[in-house]
Length: 356
Image (cartoon, rainbow, N blue to C red; front, side, top):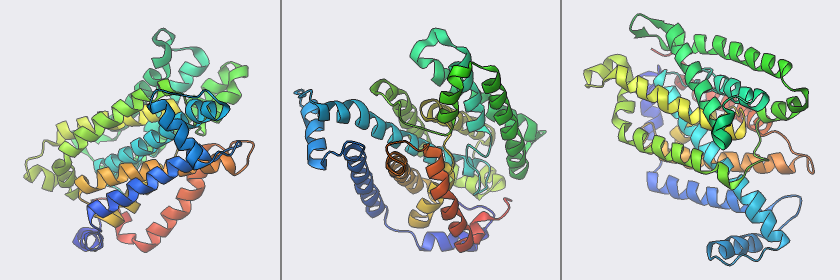
């Protein structure tokens, strides 16, 4: 993505890109290895061969219903798959937001989308909002909160029909703080017995992952990726600047509206199933761009795979670093992501200038 770094910065990134098939193969292998480690390592150690055997038995329709079977199939595998889906979703959402506002330091959390989603999800958890929707209640509350937050940020930051990227980020930071205060107020006024669980959930966790939680984020991610890959040329044009995009025939109003909806859906669904997890959507796109360049038909699939691996490995650390207790995944991603971002900023300063 070409953001305020000029042609020199873009050329530097593109000149170091690796062949896309090689990167996709490497990221696929990394994801598979991460998932195998995720289902094998835990408070009850199970060999990778045994874990793969349990999965193969279930896929063949002949489960053994042993203790290892229950641990792998009912607890660890849904958790690992959910972590992969959320990591891929957040990385994709972060890539889109950085193009949308033409700033390399933007992500759904910074623009208040994740904070707005947490308001909606907290309302469901503490007060039973959308209770009639049953299992869909948290997802509905989270997505509506994300849409409302993104809409508020856009409305506040607009000046007529113009949309300043810098203004958008500043308004996002301010409204994000407002949404976080609303969440804190809801927790203060809510059921004291549920407060601790909500606070732990807000820091991010896959500890309650189940098979029924997987379809919604999988469908949203698949639909968003299909749309974004189809709009890859428009994303490339938007990354060059609004003037360049308009000159290339891009309908900026429609594109921004659609990207706003896609980002809100992805962030809302991710928050609904995992809580608020930062730095994934901020750091992963930068690492991927350094490897494959800034063309979005390359960045999007590579970022999806690497984001999934990043989250699976982060969740594995969260489970084992303070075993038998569990560390919130948001703590792990921040602990890893913040130093990585500092290194990236120091090594590639032209990527992080003010957007034009």
